[in-house]
Length: 438
Image 1 (cartoon, one colour):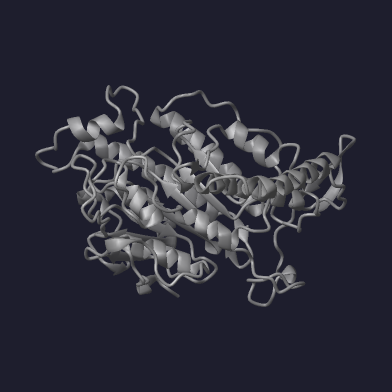
Image 2 (spheres, one colour):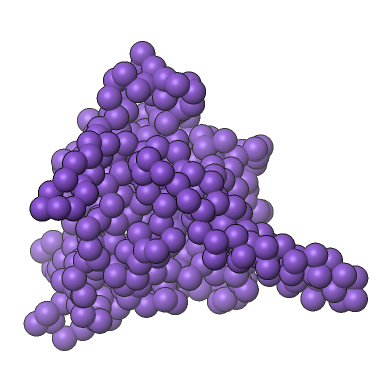
C-alpha cells in the first residue's frame, strides 16, 4: 500500500502484485510458496439458444464465433464451448425449464418439479476450495428476484441470492469488512460475543438431537451445519486477514437501480454486481460464486416489445428465411453481451502472472437447447478461465450425444473434489473431457 494525506485525511492506494512478491513463475507468493487461489463460479441464463447462430461450425481449436456468440470475441481465447451434450431423464418427465438445469447442476434428473435430488456442484466445490474465506460462496440474481437461485444443498436449503447491487456492497464491504491491507487489526468485540453465543447453542443442540426422530435430526443437522459455517466466518473475522495487494475498497455503493426485468435494467444490475464481485474475489472474501442473469423461464422484457423472452420463445413464429425466431435470438444475444462484460471484467483484473480469470474457472449454461420445444439435447454450456493452468481454453467440443454431466464431473475433478464418478443412472459418468485438460 502507498499511504499519504489528502486535504487533511489519510489515503491509501493498493499496489499491484509485484514480481518480487511472487516465485519465479509468478504463480505463488514468494514468502510462503502458497499458490494463488483458484476460484470457481457459475453463470446462468434462461431459455437456451438458437443452434443456427450459436453452435460453432468448426470443432476444436480456432473455432468460429457465430452471431449469438459474437459478443464474446474479446475473450474467445479464454473460452471453451460445449455443444451436443444431453440431459437424460431415464423415464422421468421433461419438466419444462427445470429438468435440464437440475440435471447439469446436481447430476440427477428430477422426477417432479421442486425436487432437487442432490446438492449442486458449486456446494461440493465450495467444500473443497471455499474454506478460509469470509463467505463460503456468494450468490447474485440480476433479475432482482430472490427466488432465482440455482445453488442448493437440497430442496429445503436453496441459497438465497443478493438481488440489489447496493445490498451486495453492504454485505461485502459494509461494517464487518476487514481491510486486508490495513497495517493494524483490532477484533470487533461484537463478533467475539456472537461467536461465543453460537458455540453455546451448538452444545445445547447435541442434547436436543437425542430426543428427535430421524427426519427432525436431519433438519437439525442441516440447521446446525449452517450455524457452524457462520461460526467459521466469525472465527475468520477475529483473525487478521492475509494481505491482498490488488484489493481496492469501493469508495461508495453503486447508484440505486430501479426494480424491474427490462433487459436494460437487468444488464445494469448484472454489471454493477459483477464489478463488486471482481473486487470481492481480489479481496479474498470468497472463492465460490453463482451469478444468475435470467431465470430458467426467462421473463426478461424488451422496451417496445409486448412479450417477455419466455413468451416469445413459444409464440413467435420461425422466420421463414432465417429458420429461427428473431426476437428470441435478440434476447439470447443480450444475455451473451452481459456474459462478455462479466468475463472481460475478470480478464482485465491483473493478478500474478496473468489475470484473475486465468486463476479461476467459470461454468456457464442454460436450461434448454431450443426453448420453443424444450429440448434437452444440446443445452449450451461454456467454461472460461484456465483454473491456474489446469485447463486448456479456446476449444469447441462436440459432445456427440454424451451426458452433459461429463463437464460437471470434469470441473469437479480439476478443482480437487475427491470423486471417481458423478451423477445417477444414465447421467452417471466417470469420463473426464480430456480435450480441455492441461
